[in-house]
Length: 263
Length: 263
Image 1 (cartoon, rainbow over the protein chains, first blue to last red):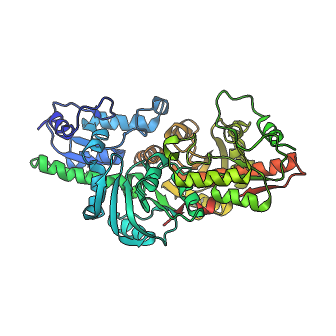
Image 2 (cartoon, one colour; image 1 turned 30 degrees about the vertical axis):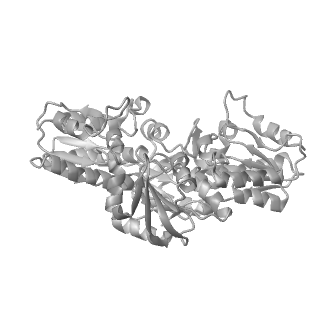
Image 3 (spheres, each protein chain N blue to C red; image 1 turned 45 degrees about the vertical axis):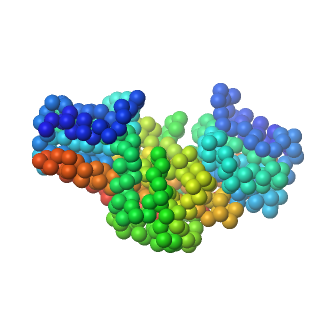
């Protein structure tokens, strides 16, 4: 099995995208795959881990040099970039960015993976393009916070709104989809009580929720962190890859715990 | 004193901007000012508070309808927007957006206000366009976290990096300037040990810091929250306005505590 065969398999469920950040960033499509490491972002640690376990292909969701698209201004004379680049080149590891396609799966595989990890698949009402709607048995926002933290093994979340209010209709919107453009219409048009998202601009949805609260309209936003919201989807993807290519050792590497802490 | 006179005074230190979000969003420039409320964002609560204290002019830093620039897609058939709009119109309060100009003061008045609130003005090395550099007596990241929380009266911050490392060279970068484009060059070119910012994309600077750490280069990022990073500047502005217009009752309203909580 070659690197290009894995890429072909991963992209095949999606029609050709006009514009995409997904590509083989490093390595050769003709290389034989010795093992695959699936991770949220191919960090310095992840690359070394791939070397250690003998995986010569990494599938990364986020950009590996600190921006969604390559930011040359940041990378010029950047010592951390230079050292990581040298590590990658010396390693010979193929790094494939798998972001846009996996979000374009029907349904979005990253969202599906989060709902699966939350064990809420049975409560699904519908998948929308950038979010999904669930109807769970009514429970306080407080309990949902506890549940999400426990299911995802995360030490903290950020919340806005009145956690004592009972919530039943839930919007799930992964990654940086917590901004007003995605989240506010879910409250207004889909009438959700609570949204679980990764991150989003603090002056958008949080301020909407505060105004709504001052008007007696109770809404809750839970920001679980970008990585925490998308790692379950990458773990879910790793399981799919295992079923596609049972002969190849595929490993999921979590790095969420190291990312951001509340103090 | 008329509304337009206050606006003229506030914009006068800055050359005319080619493009700006700053403007009189509501009200009439010819109205006599009965009192000024200065706040991070003119929330539903802030507008009612202005009514209560008899202030007929609000100076808001952020956009009042949940986006930096008006987002019509979010506002169509939006019940929270409609109710807030009615409140504003019925109140007759003038609302002036003061964002770009105040950041263009020399130095940026919002940054200056934060440094003043932290009582770090004596440690200033230089102001740059979107950040400032300080040299403080060496102390652990942990101690800086405690100090910042105490000085700003905030319940939590988010951190990335090794807090046990001693930090002396500090970058201060308010608002949404925690992204890679602003923050990473501060670490690389200005050699700061630690950056204090409001917020920023989680896959940018945090991932840079993690890679740097894996390479043995210790850096720390403290994300104190957007409002927490800019409210001190608006409070500082309120003091300036009091000195410009001593006859007018000027009040600063903090709303940071209600914004986002860690759970």
